[in-house]
Length: 396
Image 1 (cartoon, helix red, strand yellow):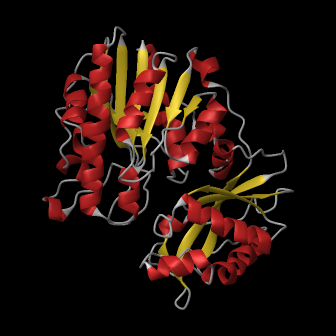
Image 2 (tube, helix red, strand yellow; image 1 turned 90 degrees about the vertical axis):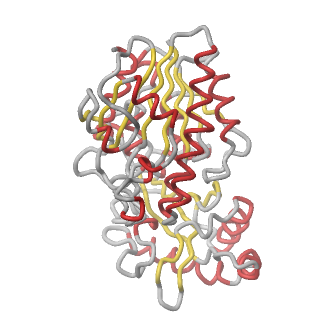
Image 3 (tube, one colour; image 1 turned 90 degrees about the horizontal axis):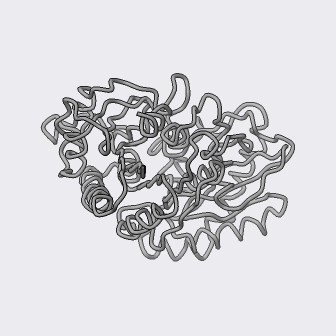
């Protein structure tokens, strides 16, 4: 049996008046996801346990089959694994966003500095390394970079994700609590280095958002997780443009597949991801294929962009994966779902359950007629803890 999870990050949303009370997921053209819902079974997946923050880290860990209450230790350590940054027993990894702040009004303008390129980001991080040689900074992908601190420094500080405070004053959201003073100092001292950097001066000339500050958050220590093969007895692979998902794959013991042109935004290489998925299924029995674009459109508050991201996910990922499996000689099952809602009205994540649907060998249809939040509530599986979905795929 070949198993595939197709995950459209942040696809779920709330009803929108401009769409006649529909959600973007219900309004988008999604014949392939609708087919999975219509010919398969589904329900609602509670991917974020009560009391835990609704991050993509926690939600995707659930969908991979790991109970976050047992295995989650922070977002940044997962990204460190993907970047090949080793963490010692006393090390604490932080996400280090390059952000755009209105320095006069001290307002968070853009959590991603206009989705700055990885090449530009690397130049800026290298300049910060020279200015702060004691800081263990590591350049990553686009605005997503990494800081590592020793001696458990900053582990218990309260840090706010920058995408939660777009358009808000930063002063009420800077790190606070135990070990936070050094984090705030590092963030503030990044401003004079970045503000007049040639990369940012050129971006300003081009009308782009300057990356004029770093933002530290998502800290944690290296997790201790069992390998996926030891739980389910099968080998897996993960395909994503995002280091967070790749890092989860490293700890799970997956083959981590890097697809050229996978960007994490609307112009990602959908066809490359599909080809990599179908190719991997000749080597392994499970593939987790992640597409980030709907979430990025949600954080940017772009309604038409989110609908288009969902449409492209359906047309250029879900449909071709189904077609490829149907041409194969294997028995197979495919599940499709978001990790969490990212409502356009608030531009950040919520912890509400999300719709899921599963189709394939041995699965009989339930009462779902299409793939949406409303139809998910009618699914025969009811509401299930997200980390139990993998067991449903493997064992039922």
